[in-house]
Image (cartoon, rainbow, N blue to C red; front, side, top):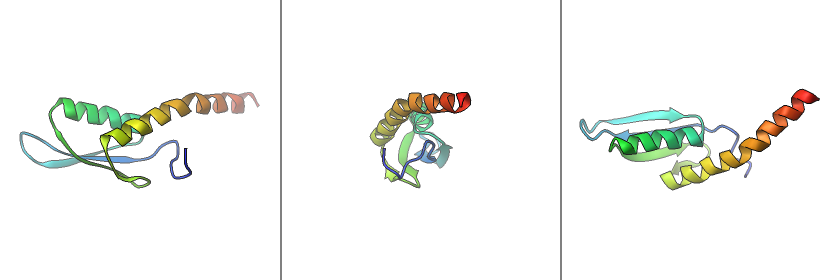
Length: 88
């Protein structure tokens, strides 16, 4: 993982509703949360306009998937570090 990304990184997902054609946005604090929101929006046939994060800029759904996988891989390490800190 590079120095740009922290454990939590805000994401803004901008989408257009099919029935009203209004553009809306929602925020997520992790890539996994963003991926869950994207999946729900796609399931409702909403069009994802773009996904943005301050660290990464504009990114696509595939990049969110990659970042979500990185988060999952880091989670056991983070939990182990917390456990060690509590023991110490």
